[in-house]
Image (cartoon, rainbow, N blue to C red; front, side):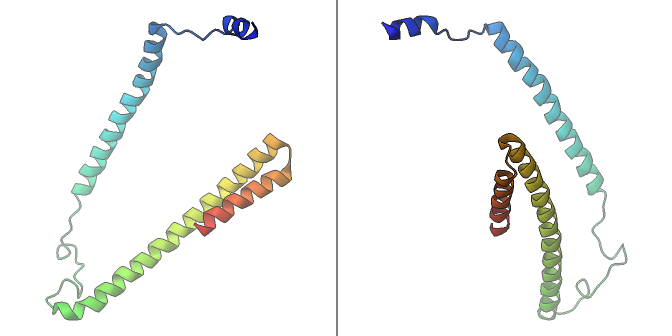
Length: 136
């Protein structure tokens, strides 16, 4: 008897087809223009970058890499330039990641502390996040 009464009192929310169409229409009105704007921005960037000349002779950037030396002699110089570039990239990349992780750990700390009313819980959660971020 209890199950029948509970089933009779439980009602599923009903949505009309018009409500669903309005809901999806609003989403489409946001997503489609955003995609078009993104594609136009990418096209604009492509047109700007395409104008850049890559001929080192015209720009006065002739180095030993562009001169007519034997390729065997250039390999160590090419290797050194690639290695220097990679190291500089990683330094900048790690600095950006570190700043992001520290900032996000503060957000985690404050939100968890506010939600649980415990600064200890917030500190432990932020610490766990930082431990995971720096060990990965």
